[in-house]
Amino acid sequence: GDIDKYGMSVEFEPTESQKKEGFKRGAYDKHMSDRLNLEAQNTPESLELLRSMKRRFPLEYLDSFIGESGGIGWNIKHIDSAIKRIKMDFKPIRYTLYRDLRTGRVTHKEDQENGRFVLDLLPPPNIAGLRETDNVFDDIKNEWKDIFVPSFPGSYLLAIDPTDFTRKNQKAINNSESKLSKGAAALFWLNDNRMESEDNPLDGITCIGHYMQRLASFDDFVNDMILFAEFYGALMCPESNKSTFIKEIYNKGYEGYFYYELDPQTKKRKGMPGVYTGTNKSDMFTYMTSYIKYRYQHDCNLDWWLQAKGIKNIEDMGSNDMIAAYGVGLMGLLGLKSGYVDVVSNRSSNDFDAGDFLGNVFN
Image (cartoon, rainbow, N blue to C red; front, side):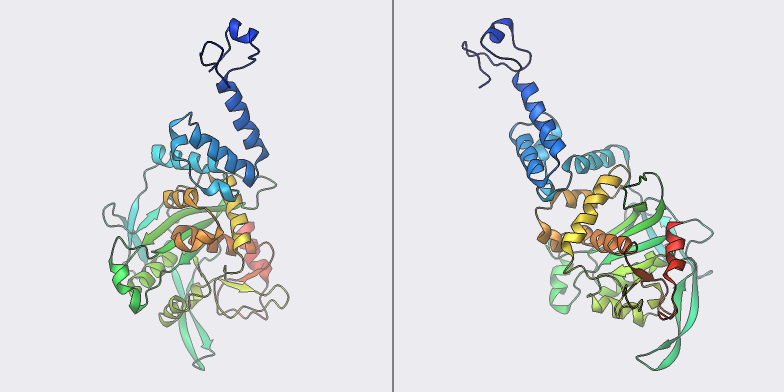
């Protein structure tokens, strides 16, 4: 152990008498060396041992509050650093988004008490809230109709994880203590160049706004997502199996805001907008591992970092709303580099040139 023959602790530099007993360094130096070695290995196993060591032998205040996510390979040091940075240096600003009845454009006002949208970076004033209409053919109703489309798609993506607003869950939704998931959304900016490197798969991608609410009605949530997307001109990327939410967006004439994947072989648009994460959770966690590595100094969404800290395994995804929203967004955004995405729903997938969109995003 680290006790000499007189019962004295060899905590730091050994005394001369302790050196004669064979002590070469104190317990602190040995402990720190073990920590650095485990951190350098950077494997799920070594990070799990490091977390366990910090909890058992805390040397700093934050060591007493170590989370679980290091066990699945996420860098807990980066996560803790992000949480500390946000709590010390960042004051989130809440906004209310609404439609100006005079201009018809979505606009904003700061509302720290009741605002549902936390926005770190506002869109340029000259393009904020702009939308256009287009006339498209509805294959289901077999008729032409007008839909809304973003004026400047390609700079923002709104990843959406709708809650279950079925009638049987209404009582739980209205209970603020309920564990039923909230509706969550993460707004990703695709042109952030603050931290780029050759091996960075996230060039330009950072979350700059988020939303997490348990509302009393499904229609309120749908309308909030429309306001969010329209204010930034963002493409909406929901989980593709959320058919009730997707149907409501269609019914309100906003399918032109949907993000679609295209089949890499046929280049034809897939039948449902958004991405399906059910069979790709391992890929999703890999993407989020990269996000933590490259964006822990910039992302200011405290809800995301706190949920990331508490994740124990991949299956925890379903009970963490902001984690789910980030997963949907990163699956869609990083899929651009290996596949194709149709920007506006009324463009013919047969004639679509994926280079048009990739150029807008990555150039």
